[in-house]
Amino acid sequence: MDIEAFDYHLPEALIAQTPLKNRDESKLLVLGRQTGDIEHKHFKDVIDYLDKGDTLVLNDTRVMPARLFGLKEETGAKVEMLMLTQISGNDWEVLLKPAKRIKVGNKLSFGDGKIVAECIEELNQGGRIMRLHYEGILQERLDELGEMPLPPYIKERLDDQDRYQTVYAKASGSAAAPTAGLHFTDELLNRIKAKGINIAFITLHVGLGTFRPVSVDNIDDHEMHSEYYQMDQETAKLLNETKSKGHRVISVGTTSTRTLETIMQTNEAFKAQSGWTDIFIFPGYTFKAIDGLITNFHLPKSTLVMLVSAFSSRDYILNAYQQAVKSEYRFFSFGDAMLII
Image (cartoon, rainbow, N blue to C red; front, side, top):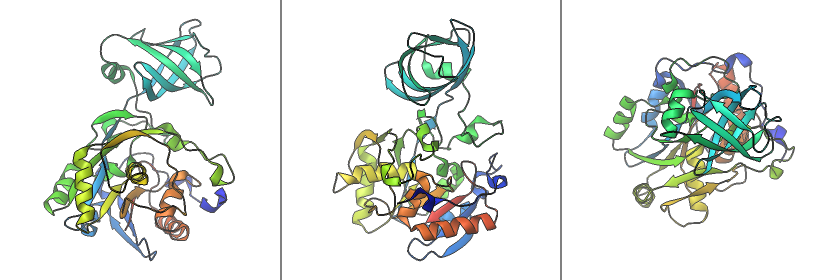
């Protein structure tokens, strides 16, 4: 299938640069999965589309303040490092700017040596494996020295770092937020639970591959990045009970979707499981795990547009995006939301 089939026109002015003051007052486009019917609501109205016994699945990953600015020890040249994935121990896959001058053996200093990163392997596209040296606890050093790694299309500086975290963020390890969850407030979640709707948590640590453009013309040739996921026994049990009673599993975000579908690809039922997933979901895929999806509006020609097109249909999704543009919805990470059900 041609990549151009997933393109759409988006005026740059509709790319949200800052979050709304109130998370749950963003717009919500409700799309009938099988019909293509569209309703325009606000996110707090999502509760009206959830039934007692349904289960909402949230990704509880927490974004690390993992963008660091420092110096190359040998020359004093300025360098930027974005930590992506923990390989093992203190070895991390990172992106560097500028990368071409950082070779194996070079050391970078951040915060006057509070973190020293030694290059131990060179990767493609500016990637490196760096071994970190520091005193104490890494998370505390990052909180002290790091900045939130906002996507490249956000040009504004974020005053409140917590606005790029979900209110239920817990498991630190992401290079980007699971943005569909940014619309939830504690109050809305409490109202949802009071209605008899279950809340379940999984973890998928979002990598920067989420923002990398598809570089092939035929999407069958695209290779997905790998991301670490985890589901515990409590969540697996709840999801199996939900399905067995004829209720729906509603996934919050493409990250939750990829986790749930990964687990169900090799199992007849949900089970406690962890590992790495590079699942690529595009039209023609048969969903086994989810019955509904809450998601944001995604970049043209991205794997995420392909995923939501697979869940509904390409024509319905592109029409919904066209209607969202016409209604001046806000797009991408700090933008508005869509419920496909």
